[in-house]
Image (cartoon, rainbow over all chains, first blue to last red; front, side, top):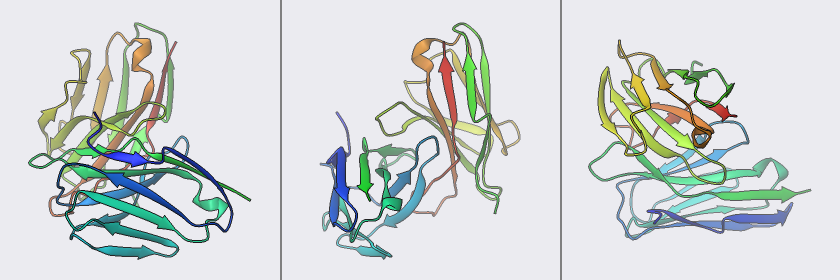
Amino acid sequence: TQLLEQSPQFLSIQEGENLTVYCNSSSVFSSLQWYRQEPGEGPVLLVTVVTGGEVKKLKRLTFQFGDARKDSSLHITAAQPGDTGLYLCAAPRQGAQKLVFGQGTRLTINP
Amino acid sequence: DTGVSQDPRHKITKRGQNVTFRCDPISEHNRLYWYRQTLGQGPEFLTYFQNEAQLEKSRLLSDRFSAERPKGSFSTLEIQRTEQGDSAMYLCASSNPGLKGEQYFGPGTRLTVT
């Protein structure tokens, strides 16, 4: 059983469209990270959210942490081919140092 | 900018051989982590060091796996008697306390066992 469930697992859309990716859990987290991973490379940290209800923006990407700190979403406006990649949510296990990851959302933006 | 580096980037080995991977963390980070990632999955935790002390090991880390961080700087991950099921991307990450759980990853070592 995944501690973090991401949906959808695959998403293919046209350039210019908007999209939202979800990361859900039944557990409460002290923080949550979003990473993007290109094929053959390690994950690159995009953002960390800490406070329930927090919203952070990174250019066309908007990240939100749920009020109860159990879930998060990533919204991309006017998607571009450069946004293509595997998007991973991750959170530190309570009382431990390791990160647990969702299974990822593989996003493809078609020109 | 000296991020996390890993060597080699790719390793092809025959079943039964031993392999060793190296990770150099961000220099001011005292925590170092190893993860394994198989196709279509997110990374899974293997083990964690704070300075030179190995503080946690996953059940995924069988007795064929050993990790060291002898001087609290770089780390090595050795797999003995490799099996085809060991084929995966091995990722190293580093962090410091107070970074809100943030970890910074290296480019990974892709292991293929034939």
